[in-house]
Image 1: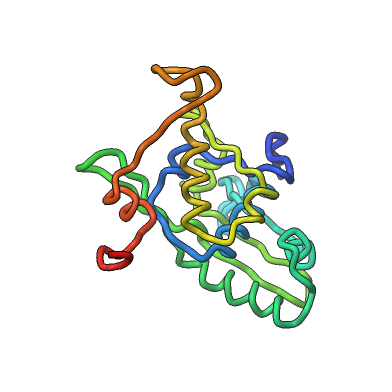
Image 2 (image 1 turned 90 degrees about the vertical axis):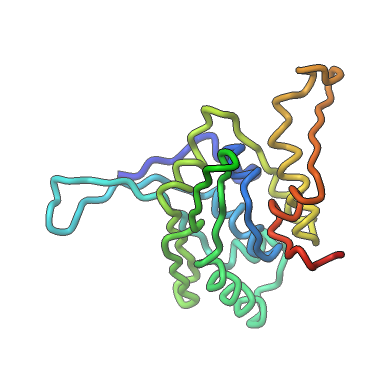
Length: 203
């Protein structure tokens, strides 16, 4: 059984606000690939090998490498295939922390596994359960990321400001904000922590 999420249009990546405000760092190319994979995400129901009657859900995204290159406006050269291969391999261990308060945080990897196969022109991303659910459970609000806009970013830090700013759009015209506008603020220490910037960097 495969469930496709109708809300996930190929032009927009949706994710819970807690992910947008989470603590993580990766390459800009890696983040673009994550966003593209999110637009293709599916929830698949699988059975345990030794107990077919027991089932569990897996959040995964299978994409064509050629279509990914096209979406990223990269040529189908061998060098770009190697670049995608190198980046996806690094993404296997990219983590994210969700902060509840000063005394509580939750740490996850984005993916439990990644399967790259150039001969079959595909990459399969298997999201960890917690991240897969957070991409679709929007009780506390969600962020809609436009893929075209993401594609234009060259700086990971610029993207993070965009992502976090959009996560607060629900406050537009509320809590003292003018009509059609919203506001958020971060201290320098909060920016360093959220973007995973070393304390000694950019002194």
